[in-house]
Length: 110
Length: 116
Image (cartoon, rainbow over all chains, first blue to last red):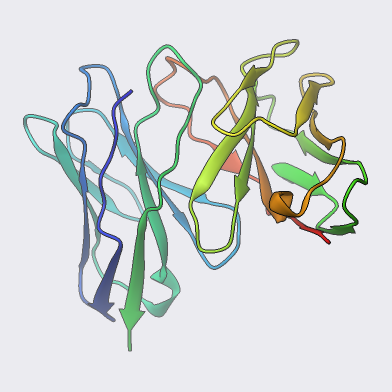
């Protein structure tokens, strides 16, 4: 199963773009990259996912490198409410074992 | 829409007691999951159910049993609670797991369990 590596923590100034990296060098050709976030102690919330192309929705943008070995989640204008733990996961094809790591703790500073 | 509903929200048990955590989803999803999250840690998969009538072990299944009662409901049972099982338990569902590539997980708000 492909593994992901994320920085433990990051800070971002309010109103600036938050760029959260994720390495997944062993990703296989048909594995999607999913991003979730967990605000305080609530249940994780789905943000966005992608396979090869860059994706954008109302919450964020996802940039996946051409070799698919890494990706970046972009929150274009971070607010204090975006302070959360962000998880990058690769649901392994052919199984149902969605495995979450420890994620990146993003702190948005006023 | 309720989404994924977990009961109870909070529970305190004594060592050796048993209890069942309930989870129900109203999105007609096929797959359901139980995770635990210890303080300051990431989520760890306990058990999952790919479809009604099937269950399988995740990363940390020891000390737990599950039942996929029907398509909507997936329960987690602690037969003899231990302090090491103090955690927040999250239930999740997805339309289809495995090779479905457009199937995000939807989570409940968790059950906070303390075992003394």
